Image (cartoon, rainbow, N blue to C red; front, top):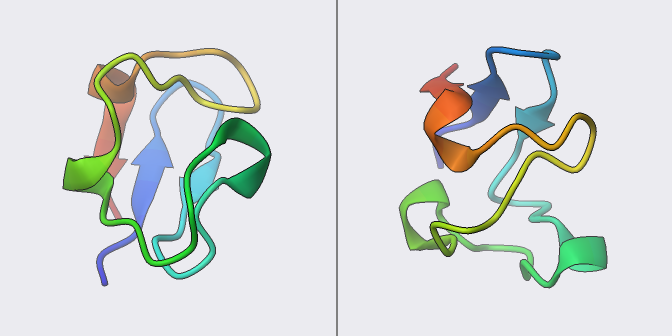
Amino acid sequence: MQKWVCSVCGYVYDPEVGDPENGIAPGTAFEDIPEDWVCPECGAGKDMFEEA
């Protein structure tokens, strides 16, 4: 699965890990994350992420 990087702070979203603390289960593809999800490090919107 493709990893995604926050262009604001550099946080890497890894689909294999997900973001369980914010309700995103491991194995969730970036495309399947709700549009209102934000970077857990800096709060940037999903639109600020780029493919790694």
